Amino acid sequence: MPQPKTQKSPQMAQSGYFNGSDMLLYVDGKPVGHCTSHSTDFSTETKERNVKPVASKSKGQSKWKESSVTSLSVSITAEGLVSYDETEAGFSALLTAYNNAQPVECKCMERGKEAPYLTGNFVIESLKRQDGAGDDATWSISLKNTGAVELDPEKTIS
Image (cartoon, rainbow, N blue to C red; front, side, top):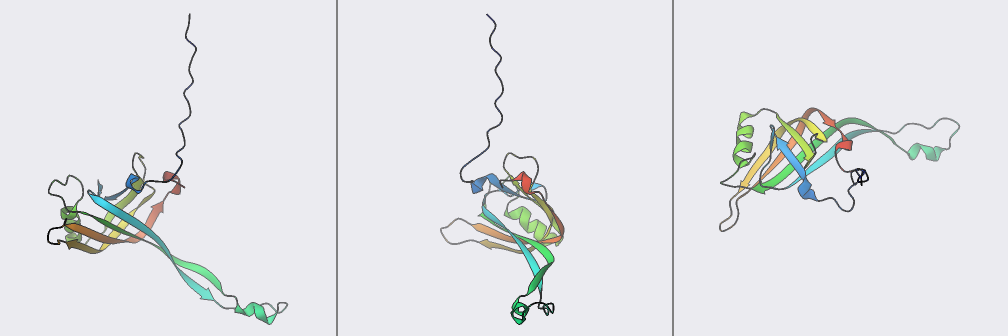
């Protein structure tokens, strides 16, 4: 007796809360290793205008300001642990990038996805290492975009 054909079920959409461990930061083509956290800050600079209302409007309308965006910027901060066994971009690689004093390509993406939701060139604004007695050695980095950043919100959880 022939077996009935089974249909492939469509890929299940994820639900619930997003796990921050699934988000990866890449610097110069390598994932940042032993990273404990990273954050991305999307900012705008604005210009405000206070204009006289048209003659048909009341005087109270002149208290409202209009704003427009004059520039966009992205800042990335990350923290991690210093490891002797680092195989990805750890403190040593970040220090080399800092010492080169050149922009680095950064990508932010979701683990398991091929395409990043953010790609661009960034300058290292600061790199810090802390070596507390009896504690894990840690590092932190702050990066700021230089030039346009490509954003694709469809490549991550909306």
